[in-house]
Amino acid sequence: MKWVRDPALLPIAEKVEAGERLSFDEGMVLYRTPDIPSLMRLANLVRERKHGQDTYFVHSLRFSQTNICYVGCTFCAFQRKFGEEGVWDWEVDEAIEWVRSKYQPGLTEIHISSGHHPKKPFSYYLELVSALKKNFPGVQVKAWTAAEIHHFTKIAKMNYREVLTALKEAGLDAMPGGGAEIFSERVRTQIARAKVKAEGWLEVHRTAHELGIPTNATMLYGHIETLEERLDHMNRLRELQDESLAKGAKGFMSFIPLAFQPDGNRLAAELGKHEFTTGIDDLRNLAVARIYLDNIPHIKGYWATLTPEVSQVSLDWGVTDVDGTLIEERIVHAAGSPTPQGLTKEALAAFIQAAGRTPIERDAVYNVVKVWAQPTPALQREQVKVSRSANQGAKA
Image (cartoon, rainbow, N blue to C red; front, side):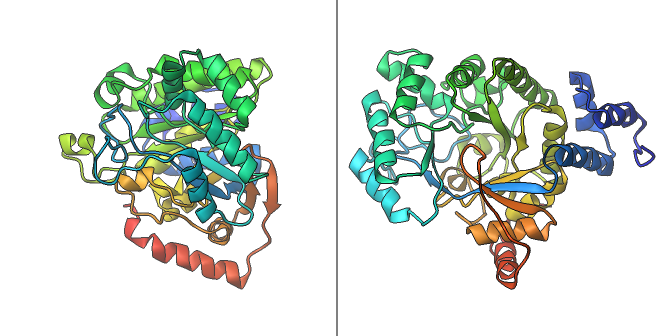
């Protein structure tokens, strides 16, 4: 460990090398160390111990059946009220037609996250899942955050287990990780007062794991939270994952830190915040997550908020998943993300290869679809396109 320059980091580096779990206080040392190169090396050590050079992505369509929402989260630029400009609210047949218009050969996953609609009955969501499975055979449905599941219990007058069981029977394959924001009650009170509380979010995922529904987890950072609140968020996820794994469940498949997008939302206006998170903050956050969340298989460098360039660099900072093609992503782009609204599979494979890693196309639950070949001129050209298209969003 001669390469460790920060004396406070040395005992932690020795624990990481030995595969031992870090305490909360040790996690805070990771957040505060000035020894950035050593932090990167430790995160990469864990990354390669778990997955070698393999780096995953999915051919995914992002789908929101409505942007009507009554919750009023202050960080959100996606939500609309009835009658507002830009609102949409599709019936099942309209939703199917929209998906059909965006469908691409080889599509693996339909990822659904949307608004909390105050009038749609729960039967609508069951019909939608069933219709997607019927009309697009072989495509997996990864649908609705824990916050939306909590909303469904209100409109259906059912508990979490009953709602999730009904969705699974309708064809639900997995759940996304949104709605977590930051678990700190101080922060949630300010940015997501009407959304499910942290305990409810965790209970939804606990129940999903018990029912055999694999899930993901997110964290929204870069707004008003403290570093201690970021790590507390990760600690609660680690504890729930321990519990789920002990019961034989697959649990959380990935952890996705989401950088706050400071455009078109009330929170940014209230804070007078116009700048995006910095590249160093993004990379440190990913590295801490990879080292601290020792029981979650993948840390995701979500290129739609990070930019493809930072996501590419993050493959040396513990990241083993860059998400996917994201056809028609709308939520983070509504809040000002300057990245493209989608990338081709070839472009994703190219930027993974350019970073010296092996691109693995996966499905929604991390089954391998295809191991991409070694670099070719065509893939190299795609990498150039990615760099040019996202250049305006490159971070300091």
